[in-house]
Image (cartoon, rainbow, N blue to C red; front, side, top):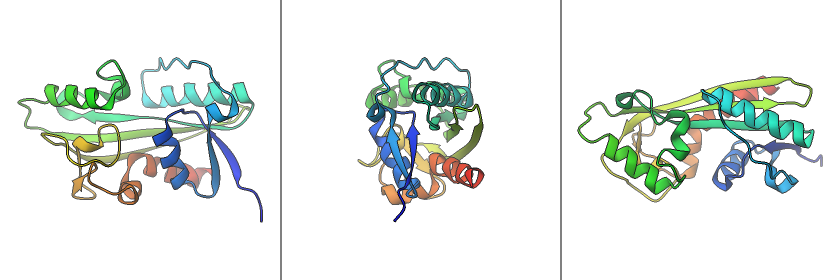
Length: 192
């Protein structure tokens, strides 16, 4: 039996590593920390693509291996696309509960609740080759958290695809419609 090809994920987020591993069963997905990458990556891009490229390129060149990175977040229409690229650190401390509380506070009195999760994936090779893909999933921000599943803004996001909150959706359900799944599906086609 042949060994799975290894892909280095430019992330230390255990949730993300697990989710992407489930979506790419034909590869061995390894977080960069497992390979000894401990540098601080400054995500100072202005778009999801720029931040994903910064992460993938930094890790790829440091380890001299192809690296996959994503940058993703939630964009809320009534807030002019916020939190967007700042989704993970919206409340300043990177704690999901605080980010969700701030989003709910900023949505008070808003009737337009439309939102989308966006994910930009970048696969970077040490040779400089870049393959990229983007995925989105649409829904709206609920008036309070629901469920114990998922992470990040999932407990606040009502999915139009599933007709339910991602906080109560199973991982299997979420992985068939998520922004990350759609970006990975598009990227997988390009990698072939």
